[in-house]
Image (tube, rainbow, N blue to C red; front, side):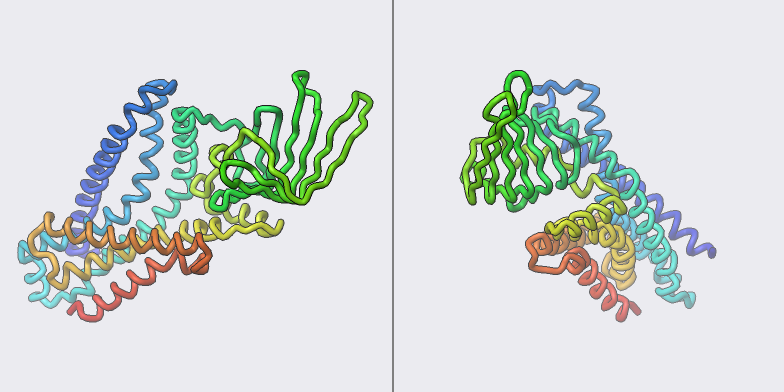
Length: 359
């Protein structure tokens, strides 16, 4: 590794660390002051409150890393441009593509590192922070922790089992309700192919109701195409007991999607999140090269302040496009793979155009 490359790498790591620490502290401070009063008024202990914010750090780091890479690259080359170091290097016959080499390597390394970090640390930390937040809201998960498939949850008169829960449509599939008396003896069972939450009530379709008429075991069976039942459960109750896709690792999410689709349920949202787990880390490489291309074309000459302004605008634009494309994927408008990768594709094309005219 040449002296120039070592210089760029050392400068990059220095400013990346500064940006990362600064943004994480700002994020935590804002999150703390926005939630502190609710935590202090809840039964959650001070220690658990502290743990909640500690568990948030891996998620914050994973979200901030691409922005940190972009800001660090812009800052390094912005300062080199202001100090006329780039002019000196170019005058010495050094190509700008030579200066890009360590940035490309860093982008690749950070992309793989972010993927591994998001696979290992983030799912565990999110699950722990969500559990503490559920306690703070008074909505402790009152069912068996599961993905949106094969859910067990308590209701006022017994238990409910749901084969699959679709939160966006507020729909349950494969519903079984068990009603018990004060002695925990089964008195009634209701099975339905599907249930939808409409105007604050559950509407069940293709329903079979079994009533235990006597201690001898006589059962009365009723079949209904559609019926409305009073149930002290809302869609949010099912949301609290399920494990979200961000709480699952890449491999666990893949296995879950396979099971859901094998059983004939819609896994579009999970497929979008699955491809997003690979698309988002890759943006580190795109942001690194894009930041370098902008700076090496003379786009930043006034140091860190202007570099940060460029970075914030680019990051905001990326997040807007990324979030919009994911929403279109969730709604079935875009294919899951394209929805997750659309922002990367657009930014990659923009970066390629910048590189064509970088000299």
